[in-house]
Amino acid sequence: LGIQEWDPGRPSKRTARARKAESPAAEQVAEQGDATKIPPVAQQVKPSPRPAPANSPAAPRVNAALRRHTWQKARNKCENCHSTYALEIDHRIPRALGGTNGAPNLRLLCRSCNQRAAIQALSLRKMEPHLGPWPQANAH
Image (cartoon, rainbow, N blue to C red):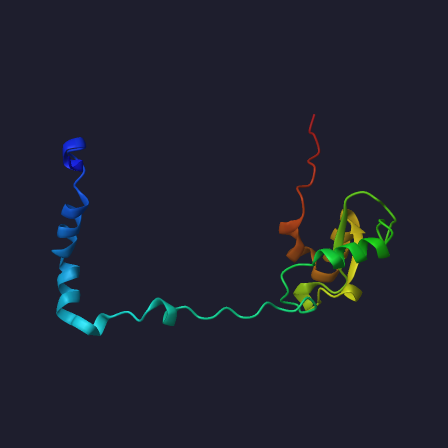
């Protein structure tokens, strides 16, 4: 039994291929011959670049060993206010300004100090989309 007996509204693959071969686009390709041949996939794909070193600005993230070292160096406290709540790894020189992921450029800050440092380094206008929503005053 073919698909047409099971679902009369759905043509079989053979019928669909036959219709596709008769399409104007297929006729145009047949007329042009080798002029429209696409090179093999291996020739189209560019080799991916080597991953950036950890201390390069292009490095994607801080690895676990550097995170552990940064936390130990800061003794699990914010290096600015000594808070132990909502701690984050921060770049002394932001990566957006050419900073690296190297150990000397990393520090442990609480969320509040990290946002304050980012606003000072990058400006409020650049940081505004990344800041959380501000609480609205209740109008009673």
